[in-house]
Amino acid sequence: MNKIQQLSYRTQIFIASLALIIIPSVLLGLFAVNDSTSKLVEEYNASLSTIISQANLTLDTLLQDAFKVADMPILSDDIRKAMVTDYQDDYLAYAQASTMFRNLFNQTNRLNSDLEVCIFTNRYGFTFESSIASALRRRQIEENIGQWVEQARNSPNHTYVAPLQTHKINETEKKTLPMIKILLDKYDYKEIGIYYCEINFKPIENIILSAQNTENTFLIYNAEHQLTFSSNPDYLEPSDKNTKLLSALSSFNASLPSDSSIVEREIRLGNQRYRVNGCANKTTNWHLVQLIDNQAISQIYRDNILSYVRILMLCIILGMLLAILLSTTLTRSILRLCLQIDSLNVQNGGQIDEKACGSNQELRKLVVSFNHLNQRLSTSLQQNYQIQLAEQNMRIQMLQFQINHHFLYNTLNVIRSLANIHNVPQIETISLCMSDLLRYNLENFPVALLEEELQQIRRYMTIQDIRFPGKFTFDINISPDYLKMQIPAFLLQPLVENSIEHGFGSREADCYISISSQTQADGLHIFVADNGDGIPGALLERLNRECLTDVSTAAKEDGHHSIGLQNVGQRIRSHFGTSYGLSIESHEGEGTIVNLLLPARPASVPS
Image (cartoon, rainbow, N blue to C red):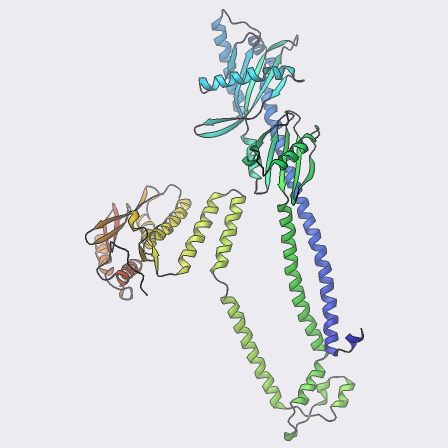
């Protein structure tokens, strides 16, 4: 305390002000960060619980819809009669019963489109089924029934939900959930047949995939506690990397209660921490387990701490400024008087005004000897203030100029990442193409490889194809020998843009653009062709004439000018020589071909 008191009055005020501003800010900031982080973690965990509950409810709904079909023998006497009839000598009646079943199946599918396969087998072995695609599929279903029917007979509710099955349909994998139910007569409770169905598992996969992110994995264990489904395929194939984790998940799965309540727990494996939650499905006795890498929650903490550090630094800066302002304000009279005394020109007979001390009586005693204010000091201070203000404006402008195109790249990359998380591939593709287009354009180098120019065109056409799906057909046929050829940058993109903007202005489909090459005696010809509206004869003649002149001499006629084409031709001539350039061929209603003539061998980059 004594050391602080020995400091100057201004320094003491500065330290006191700083402490009063920063300490409360730090405490309030810590409380706010802890509170907001806790709320975010609670919301995160609540959303995960909602996901697993929704998946469990959807699974129950699908199975309940399948059970409604299984109850047809109980609800319909005609169906019951078909299930207890021996059609050994009456194939006409069997055909009529099959038709009746098929009509009922069709009506059922209108109400329950997730029922992929539905088969009834009566007590005498006669089957009634909906449409089955092939004999191979029928044989697979018969093998499934033979494999699982005894398990269904021995189960408490005479129903067995089998492991997930994967089928390939038109090169697309499709998962189905098989189920077998032993049908009992409603009068004597004796077995009258077997009901087998396969339920489309896509609704549950949609729920899982819609909530999927890089840290979230969804697992399904069957009634025998075997892992049958994983949103991350790596967990279906045990390896040295995940053996311990799969063992811990298996233990957690075995501990889940059978009352469908959601259980949450944390798994620690060395430095890795995982959060798991899960529940049991009453209908299937399956266990749904969700695994979350704790890095997601840790990232929330890190982001909040980083935000807090930024706010803390801002509070420190503002606190220092306010402390300086307070200390300066309280000591301003002393400083003003000292400045006036130090700059006083005694030779001019100047005096210091007593009002310069304000109402401070102690300072007024000092004014007895120094009572003249030097006007020159005031002028000098004003000039210094103007200089400082100009320097501050210059520094602000310099900071503004430091903001470059990397900010735009980072913004586009953030949009691409969000699109990937929310599964919006069109936005992700456009963001990636725009980022690459801007980076390529802003680097502003004089020459580029031909393959880089073609890649730039592909990005541009990718964006156009997303904007106008199916409108454009784009083709590149360039000899690989010339892909490493150096050419002036931005030669091809203006030509493709002209085709889209002017050639296809009145067309909505069947728009074809081609880039091809051909080596002839005079050099390498690169053709940019389209099947657009073409160019009128008079305009075509003027464009070919203007492409032989410099951009600075471009003529403007009827509101049209060929600056883009002239620019391309001029840069070709400047880089390769006057023997090279471009020409245009076009027929109205048929299309346009722009012919770029370049050397047959790559040219060296000019120094």
